[in-house]
Image (cartoon, rainbow, N blue to C red; front, side, top):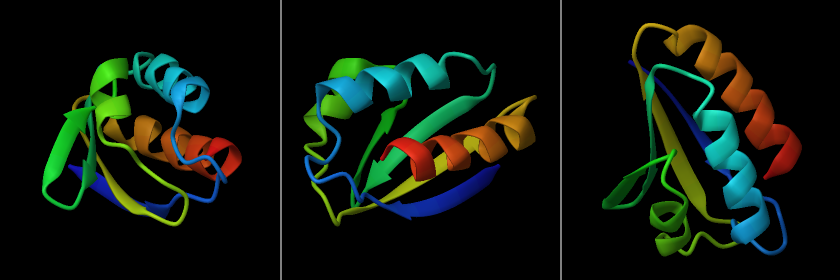
Length: 85
């Protein structure tokens, strides 16, 4: 399992558009990708679950990746977060 922490910098947080992009990106991998905020954790392939987190600008999230392509998913998702969120 690989994991990284990220602080959301998008002024609007993770709203519908970036959440949709995140789901699309997460579905590229076989690995299970989880987004965690404090005590709540959801799969990154579930749009409504991500939206239910209500992630705001400045909030810290943890991304956990486990599976056969976790290293590739880790590298590309970390870049995705830096570029889009």
